[in-house]
Image (cartoon, rainbow, N blue to C red; front, side, top):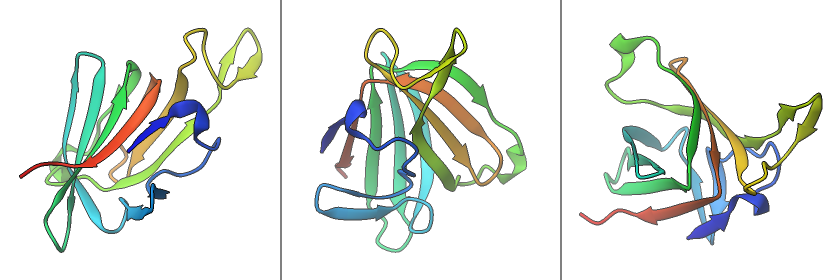
Length: 129
């Protein structure tokens, strides 16, 4: 499933959200087992705690702005707390999109780590075994 970032409701928490016709609870039902940034793709792999399958949550055309990881002793698996499309400040104004029509995202983990980045779209799919 592919979603243009401009079509995501402002401040809507994507950690518990319906994508397509499937409801995902990335906070309670999944562990984040891998994060990678390569060729402007920011990819989070989430493992379903009970069934064990993997979901790829990919942000396309990404520009990373902020990355802060703390509490390294707790990094066996990460639990996503909050991820949302938010506003950013430019010249004293709060804006929703930059000149490249990218949206600004905020991501936080329960363990205190966080990221901020620009992205044009999200792709969510079940990863192949």
